[in-house]
Length: 302
Image (tube, rainbow, N blue to C red; front, side, top):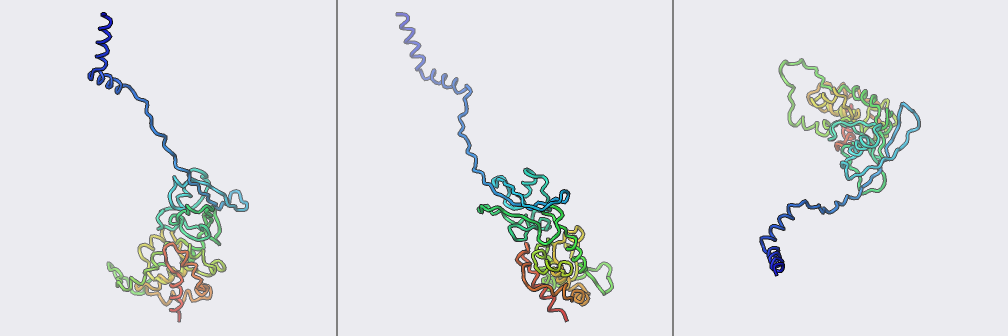
């Protein structure tokens, strides 16, 4: 009978609210095994890039090499893909790049058959076909996507892209310009000398040694040198063709050598090799139209 009373007392103790609270607290203090749901990984978004490869140290025929990357962990621009390939897949891949903002013009190349800046060209993610990347056309290749810009720079230098004055210099005085005259330079000073326009021009392909090209002529139409252009010249960030450059300097009201500049380009090859094909306007990453400036130079000729 005593055992029966003990059992009844234990049963009441276990079913009491205080006991249940104590048991639940003791269980809560025990370590629990986490039951986290498995995180589903996003499906890889693979994209193939066909990139021109050529190494002067082991000269052979150039070829297109395929690289496949996951766009889920890559930036949206072609330059992002090139940097990812160089950092993670093939460190020997060679190309120029600097600002990544469409300002310096260093990453100019041919992407899917069109000249442009890799930092401003978006990756075609919905297209299943590979993206083909080659150097700028009709330029000597140094390595992979890097081309020799020597001839282009020399043509730019030949138009004398700096302010030339005949009037005596006044110490401490700036050469002023009206807002109207300043507005005439719009559409020319924005050029970043990437050479996308010149290397897309068939006339430049046929006569690269004599035809100045759209970039240089665009600059020539604007006579004096602005601070921005001076900086560009000093750091050799020159990617405009001759015609565009020349147009720039001729139109500047502060320059006093307009006649001499016009005479310097009044040549069958330097100026009149432009046949208004206007590939330059389609290729310009800044939306400029060198063809219009070349026509302006022609109209100013005597």
